[in-house]
Amino acid sequence: MAFQKAPHTNNSIFGIKKSPERMPFLKPVKHRTILNTAEPHFPKINQKKQKKQSLLGPVFKSIDNFITDFIDSPLRPSIDPKHVLSGSFAPVNELPPTPCDVVEGSIPSCLDGVYLLNGPNPQFDPIGAYHLFDGDGMLHMIRISGGQATFCSRYVKTYKYTLERDMGYPFFPSPFSSFNGILASIARVGLIVARVVAGEFDPLGNGFGSANISVAVIGGKLYAIGESDLPYEMKVTSDGDIITIGRHNFHHNEEEFKFWGMTAHPKTDPETGETFAFRYSFPSPYLTYFRIDPQGRKQPGVPIFSMKNTAFIHDLGVTRHYAVFNDVQMVIRPCEILKGKPPMIVDLEKTTRLGFIKKYAKDDSEMWWIDAPGLNISHVVNAWEEDDGDTLVLVVTNISLVDHMIERLDLVYTIMEELLGMFEKEENYAEARAVSKIS
Ligand SMILES: [Fe+2]
Image (cartoon, rainbow, N blue to C red; front, side, top):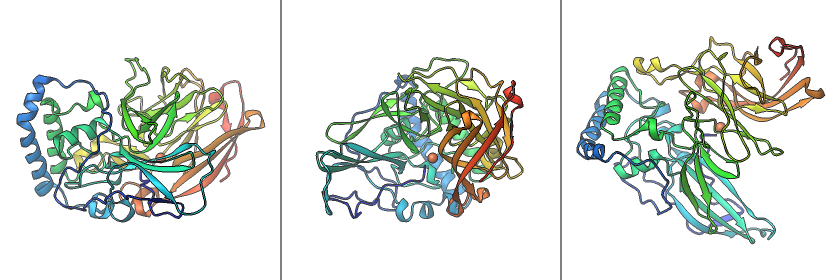
């Protein structure tokens, strides 16, 4: 999940000789030492606009500081870095490949592979408001090979990470923490527009995500993914290091359906090598389902026009014949920014639904939905079919106390549930009904 953090380094199995230095907390913003790795490939920045950037950069920074210091509303716990980055969520620095001591037993020599964990880890100390999901993606890896274990932590060198590193301070807006009061929201929207016009950054061309939620192997390549942006291709080197190759669009060339992001939890079919995924967006189509072929080429998207708003759909279930979506109560309403609030809200009046579409559907004409009150799936653990496809089983984590999802994550917990849907098949799948749901 997005709020997973680095594993502790003093566990009972592996002992790392050199632990990553803990970041001094809430000291003045400074640029921590970043170890050299291969640079990602990004589109060239307009040189003419670069000159404007060098002149206007300090002005924008001063305005940003002024908004933070004098206009922002008092920080709520959900965006107060003293609260958010405390305890095990405190940031760590990068760590080059570092041999681990085996302190108990031995590692079988036949084991050969890596365990990877992605999570948010801010490059800089926050200047003001900071949400748990804002941090730059960092991969933590234990590589086991030849009876040895090696630990390594590297940032995903996203466009955001690289640009902020070069500027020396964090300035990318966050949908979770940048809109904190009406005046501050209006000021920040104006500042964002000014920065884009001045060429300081290009979020539409290069994305603005942190690739901080998960990792996945798609078409034989490793990716770090955050659902607000395209995935970033990563590579594990022979000496146990992790490098960023660059932002990747899976050879997408559709103009009618822009491809700016995808779920961080795509599902890969082990038999065919195909990957099934989706993205949510604003404006319509609010949900688009698609697949990526075994060679890593994105296929035409299937816009789901039966979605009536943008829901924070985090995961999907995929069975032999179907893909399943949960239309959840966490929704995106950009107009909330004008009220000085984050654009994500929890709509408790909304009845959640489960949507079923054939896995290889060309459009959503045969997709059908059933009401599923109280079901707000965060993750799909597994999904399969029984009774020749008449019964579909989903094992999911359902969010409890969803109304706290935005502001009090510490109060939210998830419940593992098994959902059983039995379908009376009719000629027209749109008329099929779920006759039972057991949890
Ligand atoms: Fe997740």
